[in-house]
Length: 287
Ligand code: 13P
Image 1 (tube, rainbow, N blue to C red):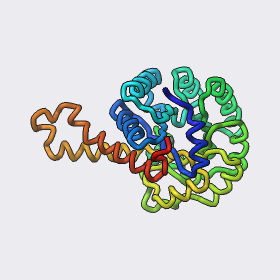
Image 2: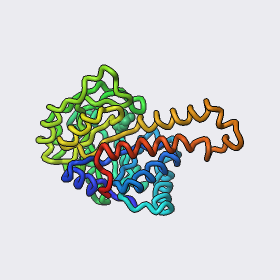
Image 3: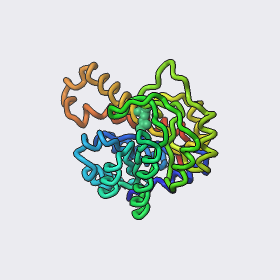
């Protein structure tokens, strides 16, 4: 059964580790992440962007697939199914479709509008026991065609949004989506420390987890980050393993063209990436 992200994130905050949100793209992705979580006895959050939602036919398909997998694969660790960077309508649609957690990303609205819309989403989600992530200050990089510039959030705005009763808060601290640039300025831990105080102990979310060096991840966790989102790194690992298989001519040997064989190295690569992140985030054995 899917669970809200609230309990697992409060536990992570108290235990000084982070739960990974790994974005899903298809059945293989979802299976690989659920297997990794179960084998690592770790809680996990499956992230679905609106673009990935459309790609997978829609939110009902995803809810059906994930619930079916939890049952058929005997998954016993806590799993939250979470809308990533949701619009207002997207959040409401996911709540109706059976997601257990949603992000309403109102960071591109004027602040007062972000507050009003976040409040409205919370009212609807709360009634169903669904967790809500809100965002203050755009996060840099590109996600589904939206480009931000590595902005940092204002601590006072964070305090106001946190006080609305959100479950977890995403706040820009110079992090970016996608591959971390060679000349990246790093994370603003001074801002994170201020946000931690302003948000009064609320679990904080670090987006753009791909390529952030291990020492920065550890420092972020020590300053209240309890959820870390990873997407691009799994995609890169999947693509590299698939490329190697094809370039080695394996798809041309025997039944190497069978999708169950062709996609297997990519699935193993996703599993290795997810497990490595769970170790780094400290969530192994915390289910
Ligand atoms: P990356 O693609 O940089 O890992 O970011 C993922 C993310 O933040 C999803 O919201």
